[in-house]
Length: 293
Image (cartoon, rainbow, N blue to C red; front, side):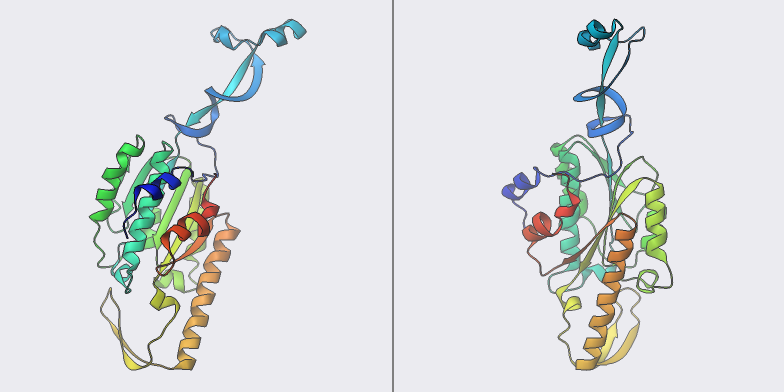
């Protein structure tokens, strides 16, 4: 699917919700805990030698016979980290999960650079080589080129990728994956909770975009055959009948519900993203909880 100019024009009206106030020392469009010179009024304080006399509030001086200056919230950039799962399992489906994942990464990156945030793209299998950009929409072409050059093969360790994220200040960490890993599927491993606690400690607003193919959500295969793992090539002989499909769909529902609850409990966002969903509907309706405006 090609994302046209009209799509990005509509997308440009939105902004990712950061959740934590920024404290970076770089210019941007986020309200910082530091005081600065943006147009949004914050507070008054007494005048001190060296203050800009243009900030003196003469009305307050007339009432109190003391000098006070106006303070304003300074605008700072946030850091938007996008982690893309490039494992082989993401290349599954008639409508491939990898295609949807790349479009989601592009949309999230655009939201960041359009609002003058610093965007860092990570290939989960190459965490040592992130791609960082800032500077507005002009940088978007560089990001789409980086995304287009991703290959989906081998395996990726989601938990290790998150742990290897450098601490670059407050912001948003967006994880785009099918989460088909034992540490996530196994409820006893506790991996999602551990990662959510880590991201919260680092003052990150965590976003889990759970990408699944239509064939994974609605199984139509029947009969006996070999299931081949796309990553380690192991095989499992199974018989799929009505009862088996019902058992699988129940387990999948429990898995997605558990991820949703764990994210909600940590103040994070979880969204199930199906390859069968219209992309415009997915971005502008299903993911509206991601945006400030």
